[in-house]
Image 1 (cartoon, rainbow, N blue to C red):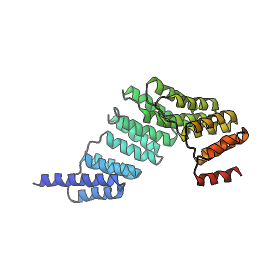
Image 2: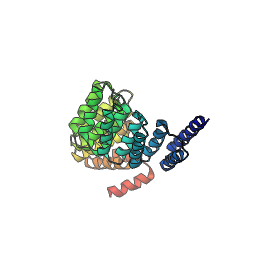
Image 3: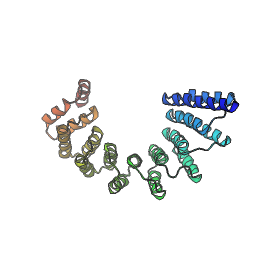
Image 4: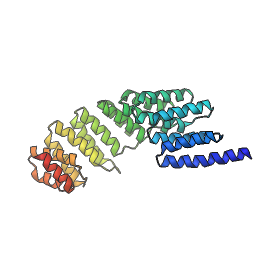
Length: 296
């Protein structure tokens, strides 16, 4: 009867903790865990995973590490979900060293290998910490461990390269996605185009946007065009910028205020006032007022 009651209490707690996790109430989830222990009930690995998930969503890395320590003391077996949540919590707040330490420790225990989610959280931590070499190495490790990379992991690695001005590596990873038939979306293109912008390789940025337009089933967006236009503006390549602006208009890609300002600048230098007017008409009235302030 006692064992049944404990089981029922634990199940009820798991449901409550899961509700807290979905609502982003990490503090309440932690308090529920304390209450479960005070009631003499033994928490399960599933219980801790629910609380860890709540802490991860709240970027509470200290609490996440404390929960891992408690699980170890209770001899509870952690899994891929457990390690992913802890790594992600550390990575979100810029503690990439701790995130990678946790990943390495779990890898030694055989808990990280074989899971694309755990690798993905580690690569995201590298991206946020600007550790492009570690991000690339994780992709290599995935192949060694026979874990298939996907759009998310490769895009995060490309972003890490972009943030560290490693545009050649960003292009390598981008080409690798095509060779391995990994889907490339607008976010992927945006990352590699931004990398080319950072490296002031405006010709490549323009070429990539054109490749995006030809990619079947891929929708172009403001982010990609904005990155390419900024690259052209920095290189003072007005004609290329105007060509891209024309593509935006033809494909009805709505520019944001910053992009419209970039286009307006290119149009002024390229003597294309009518094109500037057409593009500026597509933004909202508030944005137009902002642009008029910038142009004055």
